[in-house]
Each structure stands twice: as structure tokens, then as C-alpha cells.
Image 1 (cartoon, rainbow, N blue to C red):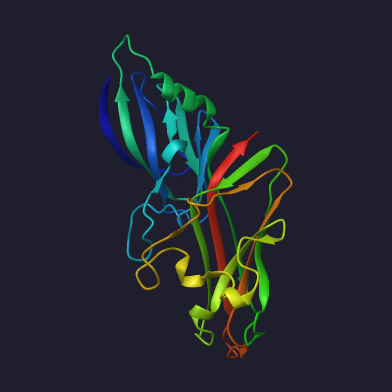
Image 2 (cartoon, rainbow, N blue to C red; image 1 turned 180 degrees about the vertical axis):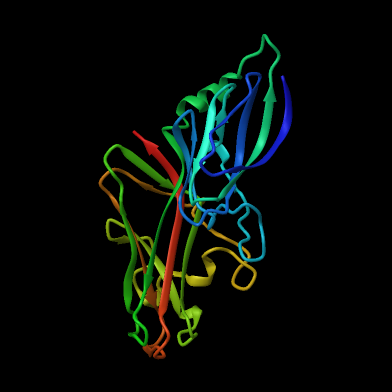
Amino acid sequence: MKQYLLDKVISEGTLYRSESDKALIIEKIGTNSSSKVTFSVAGSPVAEIINTFAPLTKVNTNLCGPFALGPNYIVVPQDKTFKFEGASGSYCRIIGRILEFEPDEALPSDYKTRYTEQGKRFISYQSGSYSSSAGASISAGQEETIMTFTCPTGERWTFNSIYMGEVYTTGGTIAREALATRIYVDDKPFDIVETESGPLGIYSAAAPYPPREDVNYEAFSLEAKPIVLEPGHTLKVTWINTGSAATLASDETLEARVLIVGVKEYL
């Protein structure tokens, strides 16, 4: 078996097929689609991404670059179809290796195993947003929900990767340092609960949406402390004003955005 580098950009909605003597091992993936991309192999979804955390390239306005799939890499065996669906006219970048086989060679067993399971366990994400009314009055300690997600029956989600939770006011009336997000599971905060221990929540600029030159070069990650969501349990993310009360300017709003990447698993 010979191996070659894989780095290609494919078009949305086009059905591709691997050659009869070659398999693709996709280890990183990216897109320029601003809506959800579903990447499929042989008709089965094997990844769900968006350009916010998985762009085509790393640039100063989004320092994530193509997303490294890790153990959830994608296998396209010989003579199998693959495609992606996303925003019309968008592209998807696939990075990894091309395996070329001799006539008597077959796909190695570890890749066969991953191919069998990849439609049942793959990278996906949840997201949400919040916008206040223009000129809103924001009280000290005010907390509002940005997103909720209840794990469906027959699924398990493990959030063990990038977390983006950014809050700001469009005119800068409230300093970013006073704005934060809080993660809850079944209404239990993954946080301190008394302000005597410090401000509540994750500092907004510590979890940039996305990481970028003018806010923070580094993404926030849940890798060290994953959140596992079983069927029927609910993940909630809020924003909170940890500073003083403020009234926004007449044309100013408070904006909050959240995106959390994890592994979607069918039980």
C-alpha cells in the first residue's frame, strides 16, 4: 500500500466517488459555508460542521483553521461515494491521506472499523444567539438564555472540544470584561455560585466567536473537562452582566453568540 497527501476543495452538492484502488482518510475538514454542512459517505452523514469553527483556512479573522477530527476521522473506502450539503455554491476542504492498494491488498482493519462506526459517532455542534432591543437597560447581574439543547432519545453528546461564548454591546457601553457566559446542565451551573469567589461565568473574550486577531488568538476548549449529555438531559448557556447596571445607547444592542462542538453518538 502506498500513501499520498490529500488536500482538496470540493463543491457543494456534487457527488464524488473514490477510485477502485484508492481510499481516502480525511483527518481535517473545513468549509466556507455559513450554514450547517453535512458531509456524507455512501449516503450516511459522518460530520456536521460550519465555517465558524471549521473554516477553509486559518486567517486573521478566524484563527481556527480546518477542524482536526481526531478519532472521529472519516474513511472513504474504495469505490464509495461522498458529498457535502451546505450553503449553495459553498466549498468543503478535505485534508488527510490517499491510500493506494495493490490488487491483493484490502483496507486495513482499523479503517474498516472506523468506516463501520462513523455514521453512528461523528463531529457535530450546537449553537444559539441572543440580541437585546436597541437602547435596552441592562441591570447588574442580569442573566438571559442564549441557547438550550435537550439530548434526544437514542443519542449521546460529548462536548469535548471548542467552546465559543462571546458577549458584547455594539457601542461598547458595557466593557467586555463585565460580560460572560455560563454553562448549565439540567439547571446546575458548571461554575461557582457565590460572587464572593469571583465573577460568575466564563469571561467573554476568553471564548471568542471565533478566535481572531482583534479579540483573542486562542479558542476556548472543553477537552480537559468534557460535558457528557445523556438522553433527556438539557444543556443551557446564558449570558450574564457581572458589572454595574447600564443603559445602552438608542441605537446600541447587546449581542451574545454561542457555539459548542462535540461528538454526536447514536445509541
